[in-house]
Length: 255
Image (cartoon, rainbow, N blue to C red; front, side, top):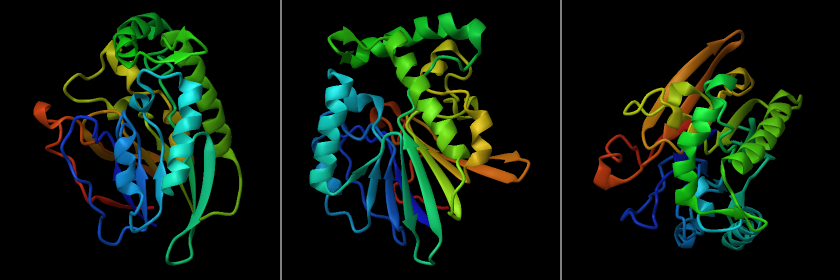
């Protein structure tokens, strides 16, 4: 299946007009499209089906549970398929069945192991303050995010290991699955644990893993016992910071 991938468009501030890619059969939006949600309407009349996984900024200033329900309703009204801890089976033009497994995944701050967790959470407090999100009247802080992240990981691990009749598996997360996806501007710093998770052991269960969140692009393969998993990030980021230079607006990925 030919997948177009877009993420981190930040259309709440960026001036950018996304365009369909020639030959794509499905558009994947891997989060941080527009913190106001207004720009989601641009994808309502997209020429191919659209799958959306929320990013952290879709929850800015909101209760994450209330926002998740409202965001899903918004997507439903626009004809966009929002996925959160859900599997979607689709068929491509050749009749191959593709399993899409998707979740925001959030950050569990264990990128550098238990010894690095406290420092990673302290570094992550800055990003949590920017979000200003809540849950049941309490701040959605590092501890709360970690709880949500681990629930996402438990679901993802079980789903990826599940048996079924499909020809390929595509995982979609907003947060990155590996330190290999770290932004080269910052590298392996404690703050990187707010962007990448240590899900490397899950990579062999997917043929392709798509993610966003890092404001840089990646396209690499991770070899394992039965082949290799392709990991792709096509974030656009903020043009004023020079982050949009590597973004490919009509990138198509074969799954």
